[in-house]
Length: 427
Image (cartoon, rainbow, N blue to C red; front, side, top):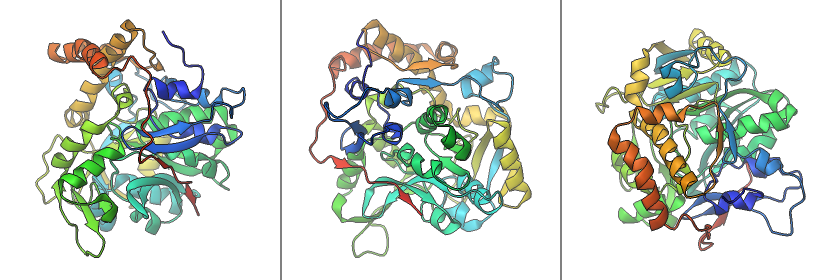
């Protein structure tokens, strides 16, 4: 089995998740992040330009991710619900009290409302998150927002590559703790980074995540725009979600006041998800199990087109629960307690993916391909509860795909139309 001995091997064997933690952690700034059109954001290091440290591998969630309970995580980690959904201190459903935040958010604006509460009431310095690149709207950049106005300008999900961990330097150098919002894989990178950088650990006030099957490559957005007859270079604003629940894929082109087209969330995601790279099919966490708080769509109830948005909010640590309760008391969130079944019914697809990851990893090991070292996550339990078809798809189907797509060979990145990832915006 090939060994992961340097950063390029993580990319070569299609394990990289594009979180950007390696670019942050490199002591000599020798890692460059590049958005490869068909693969996503990947690190590039010149062969003769790297020293002898291993920090880029130590921080990488694709090399190792630790799901074992952290300080402040509730007990009960052996029960079936926790094995399937990660640690849960409490679950609520509801929405942001501010109607603008609620309407513009992807599903009720809860993450934005919690972030504003942390800024205005807890005195946190800023919120690290990804947002649309105003000069290249089909791509994202990392930014540190300081106000509600800046956060409102960045509401809504982004179904294209992001690398929020490349902005952790702004958090580490901040005068007071910050909020960090990221995909589940990015939060795993944050957790690894905190172990390596004590000052960063002190400067993270809370971590927020969202239910996510991970991001498609940029080529997915380009292809969807082209299918709609829209030239990607003409787009000046692009929303994937929001403006009601669950919102629309809505691109606006130069010279227009309104979107040139609209697709429902189900229509756009059905198209975009086919462009997810191999690495995200091997990532098990779709619900932000390592964050303090995670939020997502309450799909147990079908959208009626009239609801301006509401969310399921999961506190995963004592810290997360305290912040949510504070935000409720301060009038930032309107929430009621939610039963466990609502999470299970709302995100059954993410649980199925988590189970199938066990089968995919087994298939890769059988073919002597490297996989991520995972600790504290019971994928075997999640695989056992899948139907026979899911078990076969995740094992036999994975073996077929490995041979059909030549996954057994090292990846050769296509540099055509690749773009360097821009430096994070810090204010």
